[in-house]
Amino acid sequence: MRHLLRLCLACLALPTGGALAGPPQPTLQRFRSWFMGSFSNEEQALEDAKNERFTGAQGGHEHVTCFITQHPAHPHVLVARYFYGDGTDAHKLYRYRCYTLPKTEAECKDGVIVMSILRPPEDKPLPELAWLTDPPLSS
Image 1 (cartoon, one colour):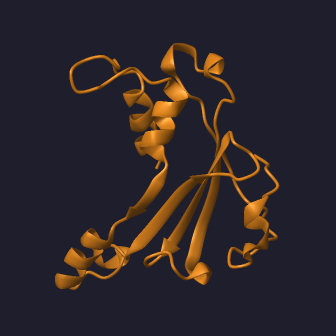
Image 2: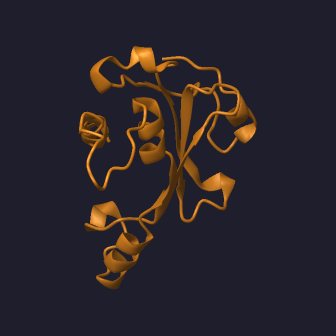
């Protein structure tokens, strides 16, 4: 994930002009449009299953889905929730991360966004979802 994050952040330095790019967008707005959404590796998992590689230990991939959204109470925080399967069963949550973004465009020097990855408290089991709406943010 660290390498992917660097790649995404490096892309922010690309010029915003050009025939395909459309009008320039502020750095934070552009980053949010690229980073937020739902992501699934279902096709990859199905292909691996055809080859009888059902898990990472077998050289394959399990089907996982990730949802990255803006935190409802903290606009500068993105919440990433990772689930086994299609994400419809809250008890299949296996990873939860908060990413803090700069609060203003002025904090994005030369188009660079510095993010912090925050982890939920270790005393809260992931299936216990009550704290997801307002997590205590700590490094």
